[in-house]
Length: 548
Image (cartoon, rainbow, N blue to C red; front, side, top):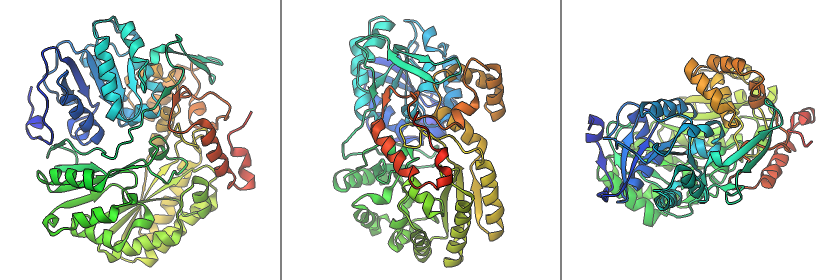
């Protein structure tokens, strides 16, 4: 069925004509089309598959799909948001494929997944996938397809064993997990046979040509936007930050040979340009890129930038954005407390934040959005006061600039130095405290849901015992109440919510993702953790993860 979604697309690549024996493949995004097509990762992987003549790929979303093959051999999911796992299960059922990998047989497709959620910690979802691709798709995807073609006609078990030996390809069923008790910590994670690697290494693409949109459409959530990835990872290495630690090293796209040609191509079909990356303005040639965009021929383009580092906000940057239809700029400050910034390795001072606000205003922007966080390990009540004071000082220094503080709760993420810390149970009260103090100052305070942070922490620190649990919560509906109900039902069979979410784990215990290696070894993460806790106040030393 060709829906109006697909007819509105303008492709920026030429799909190949599939060979007669091309591998029939479905590539799904477990959400609506407008959301999925806005994901640069999804766009790029789909185009990579569509440009291969040995693959015949059809796209599938929750609300629309292309003509699907009768008997697909591969079914892939790109997972960008934890709670979309519900849609993964719904889509599997709609295709009449068992949702658990161990219930599938030779007639079913190999179900594979990738994307930021699965690369960070695939374990809670392990039972639903035959194969998980860890890391950057650029080289991984081709190696996976080639390896599959070698064993295309073999039985399922032979296929999985062969795929499990490709770098970065993780086959959960080939690893056995033991626990100290049904509701205890992980005791060991071992491959079931000697030819399967004991540790799967995340794959990192190191080229200087990064991603750019492969399709532009008015049906996208950001309509008609052409996105180009300026940098990948972030050199700052804030100690809680998955976007930095999991994607190291910091890579930049070449302005001459990559960014300018991509932008020229994109702006030939649209006048909306989005520059993406965790820290776009830290590109070493960012000024040159800005000069290029500042040419008169691009006067009518609308420009947006994902997020910028505070001390790179210049008047010139603000002017460029203001002239190109952007009213606001987003900077992450985390906290107004200098002590907390030392703990998290945020190299930033309050006077730099005030300067950024002054520059934004001088350049003609009307609002500034700051990102903060409560419940950071080592945080005390006076650190919250410091955030209130900082916001007050910015408002006083740049009157007339609309200020927003978006604020989340600290959530531990695997592969970061803070993976051993739990969520602070005081965080919800702290969000309320900031709300009470900032509202009367005329500062727009936007807290992220504390309950959502709890669910996020559960999934980011979960092990594969949660797969059964997630099936239950899906049947109950995905509110926090459903999660609590499912824990009650499984009491004694799995650890409780507190173990996954609030407990500080011992640095000696085996983590659920111990067999999956990110860019940095555990020893380096432990050094970074020790550096962070050296800034704790003496009364907080006992809050540290233990060395048993």
